[in-house]
Image (cartoon, rainbow, N blue to C red; front, side):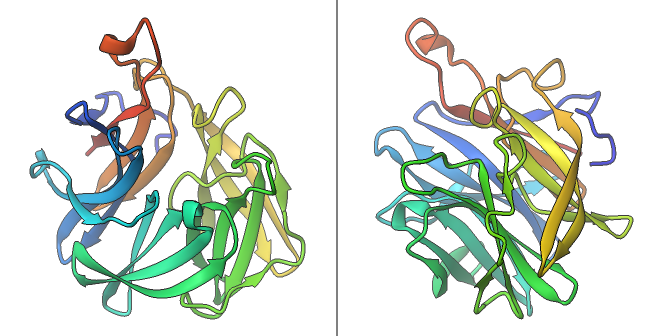
Length: 274
């Protein structure tokens, strides 16, 4: 966030085994340990589960292990600590819901505690506290429309809900800056919001937006930085940005050589930096 650029030392990869890809990296510092949660998309099944791996000064302690699997596709494991416990709001648009889980045996043992939103195809729900309330950001697919261009907000007195839709939804219609791309962070008393820039294609680049207004009557942001693939990230796309415990994580896609003549790979690696 401070550099507003890729680190000069580059990124280190969390490699997959070729039968899957990892995406949507969400690290959390809990009891002195950084644990990374990821979407774990298994090519054979055609859907993703959620997996986790501990991270230390020298990188991951092994490979990600499954922590939550359901009959439908899961992604974007938005994990956070509150009231001395760990909570998660994964993307479950395939189930037309936004659900809240609590860890009974961290990093696993996820127990569903509540359905926050129902009968909705919401992508990448992202929660933050601001102005004495909780806010949820997500893009919503309207009928047969796009998944990434209509930003909707909800607010609640506590993260468990009840959640009330913003009266001006959708607050933003913009393929370049509507869809969330990671946790929001506070810098200098203002919120910074990672956003997906999908103008070229889904997940093509990352933006960092400064939120200049967030209240019951409106929302405004200014996109200050765009991070594109390049020398600092050799893949074709950038998709998600998060930080915890002095580490930053991104994901993106690259071309798989064995498929180069036939098809483009899905996102196939994560990067982290110290």
